[in-house]
Structure formats: C-alpha cells, structure tokens
Image 1 (cartoon, one colour):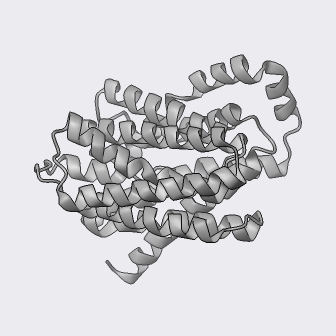
Image 2 (spheres, one colour):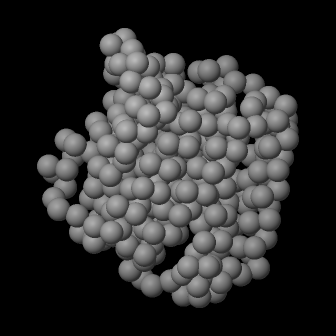
Image 3 (cartoon, helix red, strand yellow):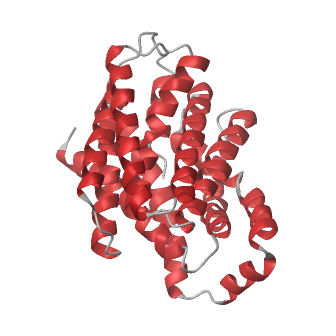
Length: 303
C-alpha cells in the first residue's frame, strides 16, 4: 500500500477506536436506544440522496440492517449504558471474528483450518481473561450484552457475505435506514417517551457533536474510506488494520475518560487481538468466491 493509503487505514482504525469514547460521552446525554437511532437517522437520511438505489436485493439490506443496526448496536449501546467500559467494549467486541468463523462454517460451509481453530481458541481465552477482569471492575450484565452484540455482528457479517454488495458504502448507507424506526419504537417502549423527550430538550452542542461524530465521521467517513481502500487493494492488505481498533479504543478511553487498564486487561488484549488475527487472516479450507471476498472484508470492521 502507498504510504498515504496506509495512513488512511490507520486513521480509520483510530476513528473507529475513538468512537467508543464518543459513545460513552453520548450516553450521558441520551438513552442508549435513542442514541443508536439518532446515529442511523443522521447518517442515513442525507446520504441516501447521493449513493443511488441499493445494488443488492432488499432482503439483504433488511437482514443486515436488523442484525447489525438493531441487534448489534442496540445491545452494544445498552451494554455500555449498563456500565461496560468503553475501552473494554472495544476489545471484547472483536470476538465477532470467532462468531463469524463459526457461523460461516455452518452456513457457508467454510471449513476452518488448524490455524483458524487455534486462533479461535486463543481469542476465546482472551475473552475468558477479559471476563475475569470485567467481573472485578464492571457489571456482568454489560459484559454479557457486549458479547451478545458481537454474536449479532457475526450474523450480519455472514449475511453480508451472502449479499456480496458491489459497493460497500452504498450498501451500508441503505442498511443504516433500516434500524431507525425500530430503534425509535424500542426506545419509546423500553426507555419511555419522557426520558427521550427530556434528552432531546436538553440537547446542547456536546450532544450535537456526539451525534455528528458517530453518524458522519465514524459511519459515513469510516465506511467510505474503508470501501475506497478495499477497491484499490486486496482485502488481505486492508483487513489487518482493523486489529488496531481496540488499541486505539483502550488508549483513548484511558487518556480521555481516565479508564484504568489493568495488567489482566493487557493480557486479554494480547490474546484476543492475536487470536482474532489468526482467525481473520488465515484462509478457510473451502474456497470463498471472488465476489464474496470484498464484501466479507468490508463488513467485519463495522463500528
């Protein structure tokens, strides 16, 4: 990769890592489901006028929108609102690579080789260490919800592979339209209209900045830049940069939010990132079609 494109890939990883800090700040302003709905509302509605019609069947847009937008982000934001630290969330969420590999084996008949199986075992060991660390520093419910979010992310990755969208940004913009109304409805039902209205009435420049970051910088810029890189370079050259996301997430959470990074958490980080690297980058035994490979790589680092 050219140096300017390497810098762009690192920048995207930094943007996605810092996104967890911004979410944590945003949860001081909004209920979690409302914040997630506003993210997709602001990201999707202006952008649909520029990306054209969806280039895949609506069933794939709706399926990925439900799994990624409603389930994954709804659970992630709720888990963080329940007390899961931003830095630890950015790390634990990477277990999605294991869920993706397991589901791909069952649904897409991608048989994991020994290196992938080893990577999955190492990553699971990292989750176990993170669970021990989380159990001593945070609520079990928040940790469980973030792991469930990672599982839903794995489902969305497999659906995206099946969809094989030719334009990652076009696909993601239309996916972002799906969760808006369901998340707003869930927020009204579970968080209550009084809480939602109070958050909107108290909206200040800090809250506006949070929504702008998670919608436009993390979602539109992040996926636009990632899709641009995937169109210029092989997925195997671009995908490894997503492993920097938890590094930036944990570092920025420590610097901005003052989160303490224990020795146990660093052990979990080494195990989880190393295991995810083996799981994600080692080839499966069954060949994946050339059409589906770019879609898979484009889907996996969603933030």
